[in-house]
Image (cartoon, one colour):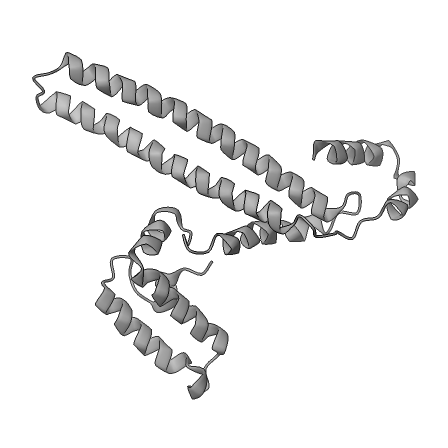
Amino acid sequence: MNDPYETLGVGKDASDAEIDAAYRKKARKKHPDHGGDPAEFRMICAARELLKDPARRGQYDEYGVDADDPEKEAMGVIEQMIGNAFLQDRIDPLKMIRRDINQGIVQIRLARSEKEKRKRQYSLQIKKFTERNPEGGKAVGFIEAKLRGLVDGLERGIKSDDRNIEVGELALNLLKDVKGTWDLESALGRMTNGPDYMTETVWRTTAS
């Protein structure tokens, strides 16, 4: 997605008033009634809407995504894979895209599981540490704050993983009934390419 801050030409600490002022300035120049590009005008309007919504802006600031448009993110995932997938003539490009998205989801789930494990470990250590140092003190407070910061970072990572899993699953759902350009007859006609071709075909087909 386009960076809404860049679209409006404001900094990430911009106030609502600064966002509105930047929007009015850009909108006057790009409005279709004044000869502006309709697509650019829509982009400017969308940027203002995102930055004026605290929840969406917070999500964008933290994860670089728009909390209001997971489908657009899912289409972005598909877009990243189209170029390479449709250059392949030994496998259905749509099957290749689905396989890669599935593999990505598996990797994210594994990473998420590891974050959950570390979060539990840190949380247990914080509990033990505070119980054994009931009187507190500067060093105790410093160590506890650092441990809690690690837990907070892992929680943010888990939320990001959950979002990426949601987007990946949505991308798979969008592709559910889409047919690719590969066909068995054409593939059989290329089997004279030899053993390397056959090995790659079997691997790609069975890996999905």
